[in-house]
Length: 60
Image (cartoon, rainbow, N blue to C red; front, side, top):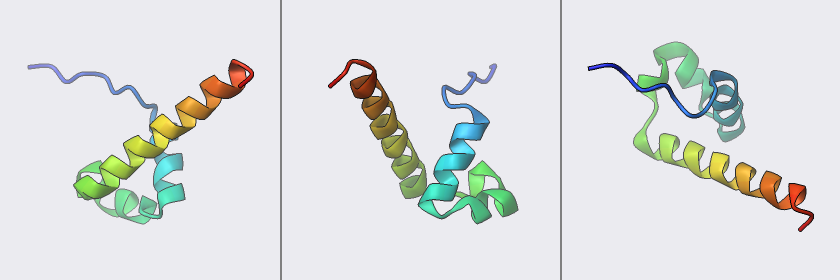
């Protein structure tokens, strides 16, 4: 079975991990080393950023 290509770029994931404070774990153990809570928080932050970008682009 082939792996799906991720929606978030590696650069974005690294930025989010740095902002959330667990990038050191990613550097040490890779993405498999983060907790499910950290992964969820990363997705939540990405969705919030995307929402703000859309709102600012729409002039809201």
